[in-house]
Image (cartoon, rainbow, N blue to C red):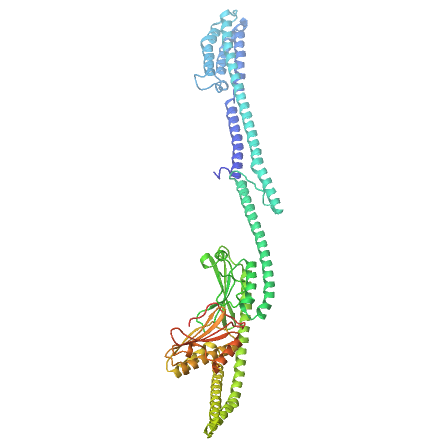
Amino acid sequence: MKSRTSLVNRLAVVVGAVVLTALVSMAATLAVSKSIEGNATAINQAGALRMGAFQLLSRAAGPKQYERDTGSFAGLTEKYTARLINVGITKAIPEDPEHPLAKQYQTILDSWKSGLKPTLESHTPGALVNADLIEATDAYVREVDQMVTMLEERTEARIDLLHLIQIISLAFSILIILALFIDLKNRVLRPLRKLVDIAGAVRQQDFSHKARLKGSDELAQLGHAFDQMTSELALTYHELEERVRSKTEELEKSHAALQLLHTSSRSLFANHDLCDGAVPMLQQLEQLLGIGPMQIYLHDKNSSQPVQAVTTATRERPFYCRDHHCNACLVEPEQYEELPVEDNDGRRLLLPIRTPGQLLGTLEVWYPADRELSQTARRLLETLSDQLATAIFLERQITEEQQLTLAEERTVIARELHDSLAQSLSYLKMQVARLRRLNIVGEQEATHEAILDELSTGLNSAYRQLRELLTTFRLKLDTPDLSSALQYTVEEFSERLGKPVQLFYNLPPNTLSPNEEIHTLQIVREGLANAVKHADASEVAVEVSFESPKVKARIRDNGKGLPGGDQPVNHYGLVIMQDRARTLGGQVQVKNREEGGVEVSLSFIPKSRNLIPTEAPSA
């Protein structure tokens, strides 16, 4: 189909048709010309036969003086016979004996041989021409005239045929040329004009023009290609516009996000609470980039698994939340179910929060599964992770420096206490011992003994507290976190008790400040000391946990319990524990347990602004 409708093939067909027409016309003309070749000669000679017949008749009717030329008359008849069968005449006669002209020629021959010639030969020279001779001559001449007429009609018919062939060839050539012009107009000029218009429209960024050419020739294929090209250009141009618009929106979002990061970085570094400093910034960043929720997980040396520190969307109050008036991260269950989380066809991006040589945590970003994060959004999130890493690292460094400074200060204080207060207490104890050796009798003896007992009790308690304080100071110097310090303390009192003391530690890392850790440790040690010294217990357990927003420490034993079931009055150790608890903003309770034994419980809300994760590590 394609080869038939090709422009080149159509032009070849037209040219071939014109050439074929010309060839047919020329061949027909040549054939007709060839067929009438010699007809003029035959007509002339046939006409001469009439004149020859009359000459013979005139000679036969001549005077007697021509009698001697009788021999010449016979020669004339022979010549006439030769002229009658001359090739000039026979050549124009068809070979088919059934042809009318061949029959007419044969009739003339028969008329001559059997009619006129014998009549002329039998006529007496010089005699009058009789009616038979004239009738024979007229009859013969009429046959000759008939043949001449037939030759003329045949020649004119061939000439008319030649004219008809020329007219038909001319008309066919004109029709071919007209068809060629019409075809060129419809198949070449109009398509070319449409293609030029399309090219002009494309130059003006107008891709709506279409050629819509029918057929499968070269220009139609070119038109189809132009239509496809304009469609693809329109799609590409639309895609480019969309990409430009998308890039513009992305740049605007990026600019807004950078401004947000710049503004929020100040509060992030100024506010030592990661939750308060990061959640508003993360939520605004989610709105700008169309992502969320986002979580921050921190890595701690005391925890084998990363623990969650911040979330931007949760249905329940996070475990680490210390401000129950803050609802920034709380959302309705319906809202949470629409977020792209793991159970809701979401995709997750994990970015490390790291400093050179140290992995501090992980930034978890959820986004819809039906679209990809742009490179700009990824770079912004990477910048955010770098800022978080810097803030967390600086906070940890500040905390460690505070702990180190506090440990150094307490070491100095411990040394000073050992060198001054401890020696003074030892001196006072020796003086009390000397007073006991004095023999005082009389009314003052009971008063003297009571005063000595009170002094001895106070000095022993003060000396014991001093030893505990020195032990704590030295312990804190070697163990830079509460978990290690408690483990060391439990091992120490297990040896003193002779039985293992159980420790249940469920406090997230970096929950307490160094000062809060010291007070908590001292209260636990005081409770353990009382259990070992007074409880007569076989089982002692220590539990330190975070029950949002409070930190709770419990020391339980299965000993004999408190006399009367109430807290002891004016117990020196209990007074110190109460003072420490008030320093922490909490309280200490001492009570008997229903199943037996005593429970010492400490409860307070941390005031430190440290990084507190949501999940507590395993005990």
